[in-house]
Length: 97
Image (cartoon, rainbow, N blue to C red):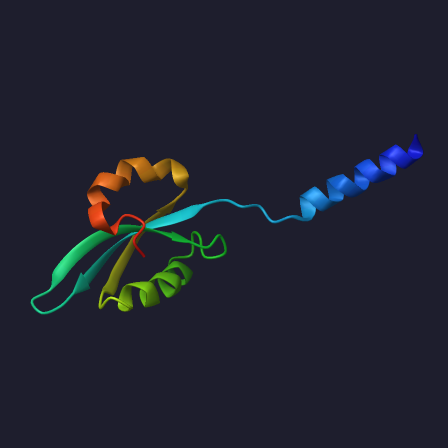
């Protein structure tokens, strides 16, 4: 019976050691071109950057720049529960970058 508890404790420790996999998203504003075009979009960022606008921007800026967009502002960060309400507003920029 004590062997059972040792195995159970080891399994519990292993589960607790695994990183939590929360989903983190940001909505942002960007511009491109001259005259400028403006866009509102939604993108996923890493859990480590979540809630830190500087880190979120550092992840998002190169993705946007690859298509000539410049990040203007991170509006907010949120979890998967906020995706549906932003999908229509983001249009083609919903989870594009």
